[in-house]
Length: 521
Image (cartoon, rainbow, N blue to C red):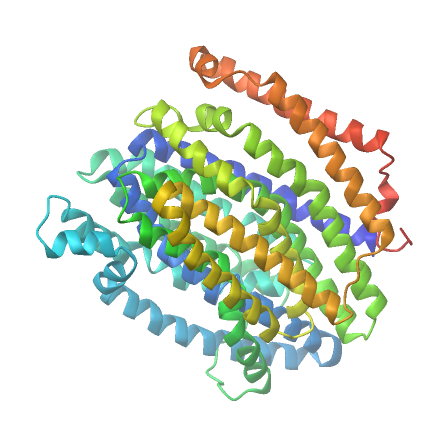
């Protein structure tokens, strides 16, 4: 079990690494093209809305509800019944998403007014920035169909993940990044509004992702004809689980949309500064947190169906230990190296030193919550694999309401940085509630051995952070470096930090067997 989880985790992390690297390359190209001005704000807004809905209807709530039910069918039903379930789910979900996509394209102005209310007021009053509302609405018409493509892509990926074919789904996002980069280089420079070229890249990327997974489904003989079956037993079970999960699994996304809503009232660049810092946050979150959550969900579901509470507990414990081992140093590294990373990755073209400083402040705030974001990803499958979607929703409501209140409290004195602070605090609250719920129900209990492991990780992480803080030059010194010198210096700091962390863990007694599922730790 341990070797299988580790192998699957490495596969997903490797494919995710490729995607995240290309994602950073995409953001570098965007920063060079548009910086952190109004054009960048508009594109990030038009891209964020379908991506938010993607987390609701595709990769987030749907996957959490679909994978446990599909696993149950795989374990207890015939292959024909599995195909029937896939046909019913694809046809029913597909019809709903088609309707939503059409409504989204037709009603893009309404959606823009709802989530970009500051721009709408400017347009309504005939202000000088009225064009922001009009252009954002136009771009949303282009990006919104991405939701349709990515929903079926997520369905295919969930099927393949359940069969243990993790590499395909993990690699698929590469095509979106390639499409956006291609359009940024070859299409945007020829348009009066370069940001529209990026929106076209989102549309094309979604289409390619959708087409890419079809041959793999065909190879597994699971490419079936969709059919509307609202009352199919499997569909009923999935939608029953999915409805509360729509909210519970997407709390962080709702919080980010609230940030966008408030940021539309703040100074120009606020949305972009939050975006660039969030993108650096997403790199370790996807590489470690989401990858680990992806591989443990089928295993947890299988343990639940097989009525193996010990296997369930050990798998969840492995996920928590692993995400802490990887996530804690990543969190500290993001905070200490925030300005150097932003300087090396984005400071060129329209993205200047002021943008680096402004983005770094929100990255410090977001970075402080990285471990909480990761733990939410890993702890949530502990509920969804047992087909319990109601409990995380209760916690999600508490977290979201707290974020609303904290947004107001922190945004007044700290502006856009206050929004990031509020998001991190609410994520920490959500992670704490998820852990307490598992502990209270007897599903997961923190063992004394785990506490010792966590202590070693914390001490080693602090040693690493202290070393990085001492060795990192000031931002003024970074400004004197050429791009190649800055990149080489940053790479040496990251490599040095990793080595210090690993050596410290070894000295404090952390060993490989502490991360094995099939042994007592």
